[in-house]
Image 1 (spheres, helix red, strand yellow):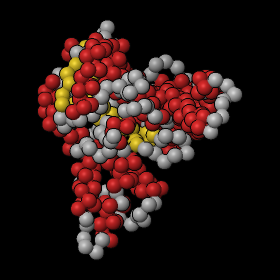
Image 2: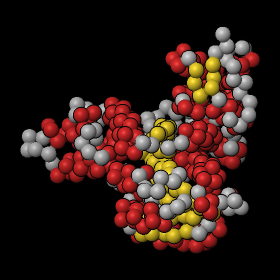
Image 3: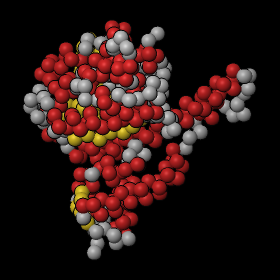
Image 4: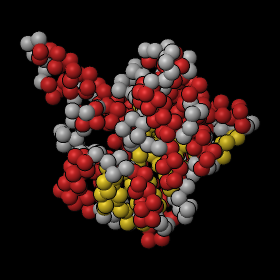
Length: 403
């Protein structure tokens, strides 16, 4: 069994976060971007689709995208294009989508490498809004493929949601130092690792960040990989003009990041809505990692012949999301208020929609729009700012200090 096969056996907490986004953000994209194109036509692309669902029956990204399309079918024409390279996964994907009839969404399944299908995909999506979900296994994505999608010629609404594997980059990156320390020159294996990252990151610019790392220093390698991820986003922006917002995703809060989820978009409203989806998905992630932890404890207890005092289902479902939000929300709101004050100190006045990641700050992935609104309303009540935080577009209005 390969690592990729094992991935589809059961959803882990990090996947729950990602899927929490896929349940929400494509709906927002289709609703908003679809209003700007002829025939209200939207195309969802899943470039590394996998087998469609997990062994335990949980929906994978293709089914989640299909379900999102179904939820807007009354007012948007959404089509799906799914690409999968692995022959076994491809066959499972086709059967899964056929079984659910794509949840009513017209769809096409393509076998092979994403790069080979991009010209066809861009032709199919001509005249439509396009949202591509790129979730390669490790560093399988070639950077030029991302740019091809973002730079599609018709300039209609286009966004890419990218899974950037921090764990893969941190694992492969130290090959740079190892190759330099090898008296016989770089090994064939090291050269393969370096070449793979060169293609994934779009050149050799990343190599100095790993040149001095000690072998086995996972923390330092992860820190370097995070730096590389941020520079990568900036390089994509310089090459395409697309803004981005990202979130680090972990298995548990105290763990090192496994990946970074990045949204590339031209529109600040996309970042605003994406941040809202991140907060709601983050709540599901908190429940998932706790369930994972409890499940492991129950398994260990069972292996030792010990029974839980309560039923397993009762223990696994003990997380109270409403109580968690009630407890954490005051801290989130206070953090956001402090961020707003800092932005006023720096700029004098600003619009939230133009500084979404800075407004959320450390609460990105925890708080969502109502918490930002409450922060603004409270500052208005305290007569610190002139924006009352009311209306659907309060984040687009200028915020100024009350003199």
